[in-house]
View (cartoon, rainbow, N blue to C red):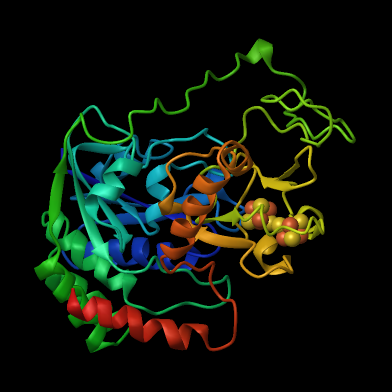
Length: 390
Ligand code: SF4
Ligand code: SF4
């Protein structure tokens, strides 16, 4: 019986689709250079992909054909040697379009396996975002801005080859740096990319995360319905039209909170969230009208509170708000809960103002991909400089 290797790449659907595919394909090709057969594939339940929704690719490699066949007899791997998260906000959890419920980013990692995350955050910040795990694991931060692009364009900022270099470092039995570099030269024909992989291989390091570290929240659990409990179809309850709901906190009359699906939340769909300045809001209703996910709860005084159960972080509300800095999209990594901003503002207006200013100031670079012509030409050199410095 030979050895089976499994690697998963967790990415944001559409925006990072090509990145994930490039990484998983190159893993298999590099292993082939060492005589190991392998296969790369996307998680069936994530297709068709949706903008920003967490999705997975897998690369499975074995030391021989029989072991590979045996490994592939499973629908998808139950445990992996390495988990790669190409966007650091995925550390908060993975909630796929097919809806498995919120799953910890490190759920499939074998004991002492390695989680590689692309991020400008410190390791401790990523540990705090990630759910606790019963067994220790290694966390390695690939320093860089999470690489986002669109469906038809690819942002060639070396994230792909740097991750391959990191895999060679943390799982040397899978393949060597030399095999990675051969694939880079065969596929991309780019010596500088081969050097980027080598630089990451030499410089990246990992820290051990123990079972008592991380987010103590119990991840979402559910029981699958028995066959005799299933209806003739699966229905996701829609929002009842025109149903006003009493404010659950103040029980005040007025305002409008649409009913929302009690189970499907979008906590981990977004990479940014809107921060609203209720003191400068002119109640024009544009954010409420344009939000594609009906996120805004109308408060009794006619303000608009973006509900974090529903927000996918698209940024439309920021784009349509006519008041300067009234709605600002802020990196999701800057938040530790999903509480109502309006509740915070209502209880302590001065405290809210200070909180808001601090969130806007700490506004780490974040983008949903292709926003204007020439954007990548501006961003790629910055990323390559980060890669060069290691
Ligand atoms: S970012 Fe704004 S417009 Fe987009 S889903 Fe969230 S609240 Fe709605
Ligand atoms: S778009 Fe801006 S000003 Fe208009 S209601 Fe929304 S937050 Fe207020």
